[in-house]
Image (cartoon, rainbow, N blue to C red; front, side, top):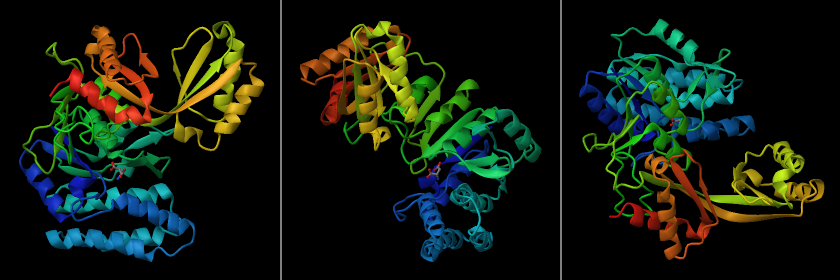
Amino acid sequence: MKVVKFGGSSVADAEQFSKVKAIINDDSDRKVVVVSAAGKSRNEKIKITDLLIELDKLRISGSDYSNILNKIMQRFLRIKSELGINFDIESEIRKIEVNLANCSSDYLISRGEYLTAQLMASYLGFKFIDSASFMMFSKNEIDLNATSKEFHKLYSETDKVVIPGFYGNQNGNIKLMQRGGSDISGAILANILNADLYENWTDVSGILMADPRIVSKCKRIDSLTYGELQELSYMGFNVFQEEAVQPVRVKNIPTKILNTNNPHSGGTLVVDRIKRDSKQLITGIAGKKNYTIITVKKYQLNKHLDILQKVLSIFQKHNLIVDSVPSGTDSFRFLLPQTELKGVLNSVLSELKNNCNLDDVFLNDNIALIAAVSTELSKRPAIAGRIMQYLDKSLINIRLVIQEGSDMKVVFGVSNADYEKTISNIYKNAVGQ
Ligand code: ASP
C-alpha cells in the first residue's frame, strides 16, 4: 500500500487535478492520498494558503475582506465546474464565512487543505477523512499513538481515502503545522499505516544536488539516505519538510520525490542505507545566507564557565537560538540567523560587554553557511580538507568550518558575497560535470 502526497502546485487548478487522477488510476496501491491546499501553477499566481493568511489579517484588523473571500470562492468553483465535480463547495465556503466572526486563525488558514481535499475526494470517488478527526497533537507535538488509534477507527484496509494535510487537532481545536506541513501529514500516515512506499509528488523530478539557479545542468540525486535528506532540508533545500523525515525514517519506509507534471521522469529515492560508488565525494550541497557570528573573548575563557553561563543567559533572555562554533581557549563563537537578532542586537551586545566581564566582544555579519552533505564524510573526514583546498585555490575566504566527528556534513562559513561562488566551486570540484 502506498501513501501519496500531492503538493500545492499539483492541485493548483483543474488541469493539475486531472494529472493527479491519472497518477492515482495508474496504480491501485495508491490508496491514501494527502493533499496540500491549491497552490501556484501556470495559471494561478497565488497560493490559497497565502490568500487565507491575508484574509485572516483583514478580518482581525476589522477591514473589508469580501474581495479575498470572493477570490477563494471563485478559485474552487472554477476547479469544480471545469471538472464537473458534484460536490457542494459553495456551502462549505459559506459555512467558513459564517465562522469568520469568531474562529481561530489556525482554523481559517487550514481551510485551503480542507476544501481542496473535499473536492479531490469527490473527483476521485474516494472517501474524505478530516485530519481534525484523527491527527492528534499533544503539547504542540503529534502524538503518534493517539493518531494511529483514532485513524484506525475511521479507516479500513480496503478504503481509498483523501486526507487534507497541514493540520490536526489539539484539545478539540484545529492546530496548524508549519508551512509545508502536508509533507509531515503524509509521513505520519505512512508511518501509522506501515506503508510500502511514501510518494511525495511535487513540481520537480526529484532533488537536485545543488540549487539549479547557481549550478546550471545540476545533476539529480537518484538516491540518498534519510539522514542526508534531513541535513539538506535543514540547510535550505525546500523540496521536503525537514520534520517529515523522522516519521518515515523510524519505520524505514522508502520515500520517493516525484514530479506530477512528468510522472515517468524518475525522481529521488530516500532510504536507510546506500552503497555508493567511492568516487562520489558528496551527495548534495545546500546553504543559507545572512548569519551573524558573535565572538566573546576572555583570557582562558575555557576555565571560566561562570562567564560562559552569563553569556548564555543573555541569549536565553532574548529567546535566541544559538549554535556554538568550535573556538580557541580564549574565545567562544556563537552563530545566529540575522533575522533572530533583529531589534535586539544592540541590547545583546551591550549586555555582553557590560555584564560578563569579558575582554572583548565582536561580531561578523553577512555570513553564508554552505553544507556539503554525504554519509561518506563520516567515513572519510579528509574530504573536508580536500574541499577546503579547492576553496582556497579559488581565493574564497573561509570564515569558519564546522565538522563534527560522526557527522555527515561539513559546513563552511563564507561571506554572503561568496555564497554562489562557493557552491559552484564545491560542485565543480567534488561532483564534476
Ligand atoms: N498549504 C500549506 C503551505 O502553503 C501547507 C503545505 O503546502 O504543505 O505551506
